[in-house]
Length: 194
Image 1 (cartoon, one colour):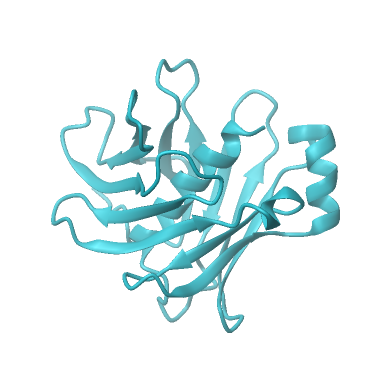
Image 2: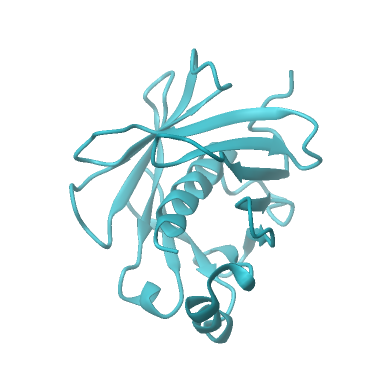
């Protein structure tokens, strides 16, 4: 079995026909192997997601939990579920996200170390009008502009799919666990607003 946090490329696909708010399968880039299963915990005041090794949910690998009950600029802590080791956090920039979605990537001391930003303001405005006809792309970069990768939605009117690509992060600056946690969080939160 492939180490789910060792790859450069992934495909995340929203599970169709689910009773929970958000559930996703994480595949290798060629969709040959399901690497992870992510699911939002239902009926919680603070939003919480777990990323499991598989759909049996017998082994949680990541925990993503909101710090606040209701907040447009919510911060989501991302931790290793096995050791409870904090990995960092994702914070949505609420006001900036009105025109163009933007998230901050935080380290374990809550210092901003990177961003995930929608590719262009013009395309973002078009997306707000025509919804999923123009697939979203988020570019990930460090605060000093070094590229970490991108999240690219694939056009499919029936199934929500996003490619995660960390190949630009040649120096391994972004822990893949934090990167995958960020992707699951963003897909659930941004996807809910569409």
